[in-house]
Image 1 (cartoon, helix red, strand yellow):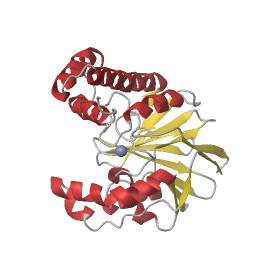
Image 2 (cartoon, rainbow, N blue to C red; image 1 turned 120 degrees about the vertical axis):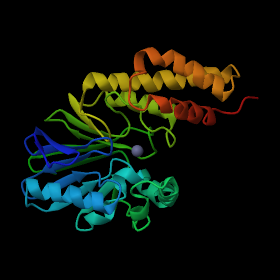
Image 3 (tube, rainbow, N blue to C red; image 1 turned 90 degrees about the vertical axis):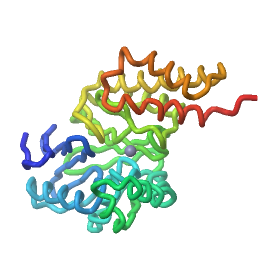
Image 4 (tube, rainbow, N blue to C red; image 1 turned 180 degrees about the vertical axis):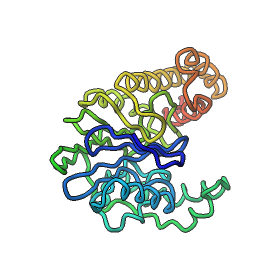
Length: 282
Ligand SMILES: [Zn+2]
């Protein structure tokens, strides 16, 4: 384990496989092969991407060959332009979302007037140039790396990076260890199925896009959370409850088991999203 002294921490999970954790912000992954490096997620603005690349340089002088986008969200993929020397890999829907929704995400961050709102104005939104639909198997530096799409969830283009021999998984934002994911771009009913399929992958530990490194049981909890939230929301919708009433009842039902999770306060985002994705009542 090593640290660069900022709020980032680099953890070696297997020989040459690193999680770069960024406290309260977005995590990345670094996999050092025989001749080159694969990076997972480019972070939110070019200056963040350059800091990430400086950390790669501290680990190895091998060149970055691949950048893999777990999904298109700005805080994971708006540093892509700093990887012009690499092949940028992502799901076909990740590319489409960056093309169709990326500008809206940028405007949203500018409107929030946060620390990176100025820099984000200058970002050249750079979608993946190598896309796939179901699965891409890389043989990289003596290890197999499976890039797997399991359906819509947190976005329409979330992929999982699975290192079966190391029993490691990078989950992007579909699931965290003890945290409620961002749900306003989610596909709530599909998300349950996707979460269920994750549990079929060979892994013991996972790196989420946010929060700490987790172990397999935390992904079961993450699935249980989404399943309960969506099922309860849909039932409330069928009962004709208005959104505020539904949100309070879902909050009350989930508070005991999940109330201590990071981001529990934004549970209402998920209820509202589930409501909007129900077919209208007759
Ligand atoms: Zn996201």
